[in-house]
Amino acid sequence: MTNVSSKKRLEDQLLSISRGAAAAPPVLRDTRRELAAEFFRGSGIEVGALHLPTAMPTDVIVRYVDRMTVPELRKHYPELDAQDLAPVDVVDDGETLSTIEPESVDFIVANHFLEHCEDPIRTITTHLDRLRPGGILFYAVPDKRYTFDFRRPRTALSHLIADHEDGGQASRREHYLEWVRLVYPEGDRPPGDQAAPELAADLDARGYSIHFHVWTQADLLELMLHCHERLGSFELEAVRRMGLENIVVLRKHGELVVREDTAPPAAVPRPAHPLSVPELEARITELERELAGTREEARRLHQRVGMGDQMLADVLNSLSWRLTQPLRTAKHSVARIRAARGW
Image (tube, one colour):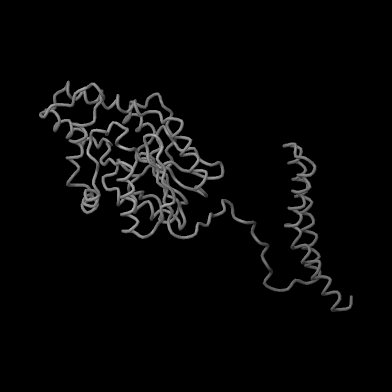
């Protein structure tokens, strides 16, 4: 049985480590914001935002994906009890995104997420699959040299390929053991040889999210270039190192076509058979009543929101042009019929 004091000590270490990384320095947030403004368009998702969601451009739509609801996340991460958490719009595994349809989003953000994946190559492949052509994949990944992972050996590309072949099954236990032995606050001591395996097994059984893999900037770029060669479906748009993290921006091959949020006004259905002159005149009268109602609605809108005279004129002109198109067509049809029949 796991020694109670050792387990409590591990919990304290988790708390200390997580609180030490609880707030991203402003320079990191600014760099993410600048890159987001440059590359994000349309609608997308952010995976695992927790207390540090990316600052998004005002003209994009974002949904937040996490593996738990907000109450469950608070229970799982008590060290974040004083932090505001991003809302969770979609409960899903960020590595598989089983609820997100292929080619359905324009961008995917996953900051400080890739290192938590047991099979990063599969995760990158899945994320690219969910992007529309021309979509953006945005990863911010901590550099092991500047975080609590500094004692850990760098993850070799060969190790990542092996994890991809078996889904990380063979190496999972060793990852937890390495984490327990080498990740602890400065001035503290690692658990002993007897306690470490038991503590690692406890974390494994709880599915506690650790950094399974750790990289420097060079290691991360090696992984991206390997995926570029393996998949052949994206280009590396940007690489940025800022503070303790490295950012890579990938663009899926193809041209991005941002879909409109609202459908265009429905066209007035064309009659199956030509209308008679009386029917056309009745239709003209009906359209004139609809236009009068629209003008009255615009007038009330002007009173409610204090719209300026010029803005109101623009709205009326726009509505008039759209709504009176059938009216103009009908009048021309009547004129042609009258001329043809000599009326």
